Length: 90
Length: 90
Image (cartoon, rainbow over all chains, first blue to last red; front, side, top):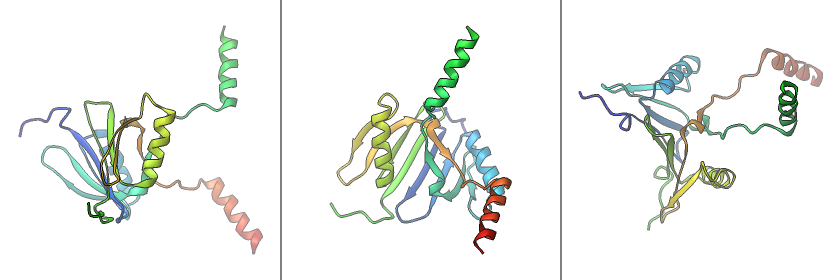
């Protein structure tokens, strides 16, 4: 089978309003590693479903484990600390 | 248009290895609210794409904002504190 382009190597999370689990299909190595580890640590929650023949894997896991998290904004106190550190350097 | 069943009301995150953004299509009200807020706070990062005519919305956002996070395990110290609180109650 021809190697897939980077654009074709997709990661898809899919869930619905009825079921508690999400299905994850991914070519991404980092996700694959993470899912493999979660599967070992939470064998009742994270289920290995299948591997296709060109490098993608499919798992199911609780959909509430999926989060959208923007990068952390430093707090006011943290900003002051960073400011002081900069001053000390100069 | 007939109302979709809970099973048909899907949420789909899709991304690939080439592009930095993920596309999110969702009927889920909580995700819709969260995305609307993120869109206000990060207008350069979270882009409203479209709304279909039966209640789903589509956004794009940086794919690295999507995280798989299992529920937090209490630390040993936290476990001891919880244990003490229980003892005090009895």
